[in-house]
Image (cartoon, helix red, strand yellow):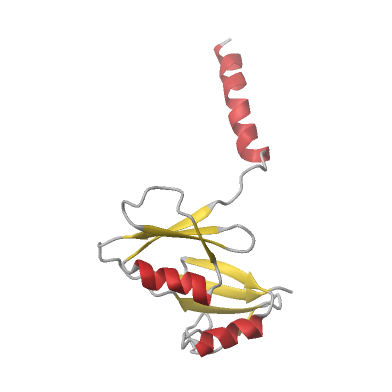
Length: 147
């Protein structure tokens, strides 16, 4: 009887984890030392729309939303943040890859391929172009084209 009760309790948990497709990405929260500089980067360089902060302002924060609704929440911190390896990055796709590259160049933002070759576009085996660069805080960003 104990085994049957256990199975009845565990099956819904297993089923939720395996079959529930209702989970949707909501936001990425990033700690930043200069809220204005980082916020302006996500707004002006990446084109994210600044939205109303839905939480208190202690600590200070700025929220942004992409065209498809993905949010980035920048949270101010006085803590000195460590360098972040490139393997930990956010990735975005853009419709006009060349226009995006020109925007980076026009704003003196250095980009490169995975190896770090400056101003080099990487062509993946599946035909996608991609680049890597860092935001003002040092977080890595990958941008690729939409095929």
